[in-house]
Figure 1 (cartoon, rainbow, N blue to C red):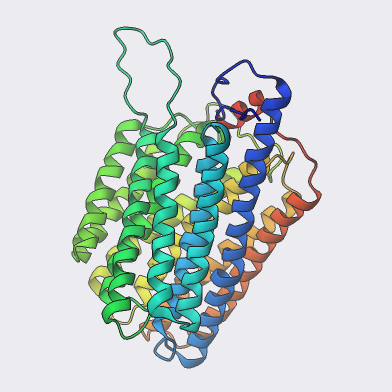
Figure 2: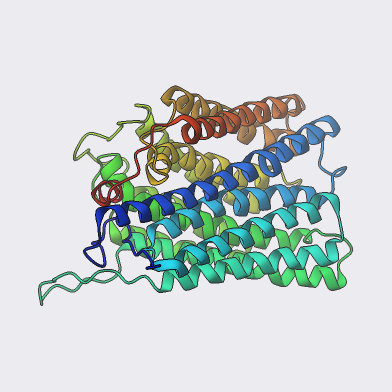
Length: 451
C-alpha cells in the first residue's frame, strides 16, 4: 500500500497527488489532533482543575496549606502544565508538520501514547503514592522519550524554499524564535523533571520536590516554556485575528532575551534578579505585539464571540500583573501568598485565558470541524475564568499573609468560578467534536487559518 504524504498548513503539497489522498491525509491529521485535545481536556478537568479545587477548599478550611501533602499540589500543576497545555501544544505541533507517510502517523501515535501514559503515571504516583519510587522515574522517562520523538519528527520538517531577492537577508522570524525558545524551555523542564524524579526515587522521602527546588522548576516551566510559546503563537496569529500591526521584532527579541536571562537567574536561585527581568520581559512582550496600536483591519470574529479581541488583550494584562507580583513576592513574600497569586496570574490569567480565547478559533478548524459549538458558552467560560482569577489573585496574598482574615472565605468562591469556567470550556469543545458540522479542511482552507 502506498504511503500518503501531505503538506503542512500553508505549504504546497510534495506531489500532485489526488484530491482524495490529500483529503484523507488531512482527515487523519485532524482526527489525531482531536485525540490530543481530548486527552488535554481530560487532564485539565480531572487531575488538574478538580484536584486544584479540592486543594483550595482544604486550604480555605484550615487557613493554610500545611495540612496537605506537597505532592498533591505538584501533581495538580503537572497535570495542568504537561497534561493540558503540553498536550495541546504537542498536538498542534504535530498537526503543523507535514505528514510523510506511515512513519509520521506512527511516530505521532507513539508520542501520544507515551506522553499520556507519563502524565497519568505521574498523577498516580503524586496523589496515591502507588509504588512511587518506580512509577515516578518511569513517568518522567516516558515524557522525555515522547518529547524527543516530537523533536525528531519536527527536525524532518523543512520549510519550502521561496525565491528571495539576492540583496534581501531573511533570518528566522521572531515568532519562530519565540516558539523555538519555548520548546527549549519545555525540553529543559522535562529533563529537569526526569533528573529530579530519579533522585527522589533513589533518596527522597516522598514523591514531592523540595520547596526551593520546586520554585526553580516552576520558573522554568512557567516562564521558560509557557510564556515564550504563547508569545510566539500570538505574534503569528494576532495580526490576522485581531487586526493589529505586525509585531515589533526587535522588541519581541529583547523581551525574549530578558526572559531567558530571568529564567536562568531563577533556575540558579537568584529570585530577586529573576523577578525583575521577567517583569520587564512581560511588559515588553505586550508592547512588541502592538496590542495598543491602531488597528490595520477589523478583527476576525467569525465563528467566535465578538469579545474575542478583548480577552486576548486581557491575557497580556494578566501577564504584566504576574510579573509585577513576582517582583513584590521576591522581596516581601513571607507565607507564599504573593508567590501563589503571581503564579496564578501567569498560569490561569495569562495562559488559560489565551487557550480559552484562541482555542475556540483554531481548534475546531484544525480538528476538521466548521466552528465552535456555542459562542455563548465560549463567552461564559471566559467571563467566569476572569472573575475567578481576579478574586484569587486579590484574595490569596491577603489571606496567606494575614492581612485580611475574610479573604479566606473569598478563595472558595474564586475556585468555584474558575471550575465552572473550565467545565463550560470542556463541555463546549466536547459538544463541538460530537455535534459539530464536519468541515475537514482543504489545503487552501488550512493555509487561510495559518496565515
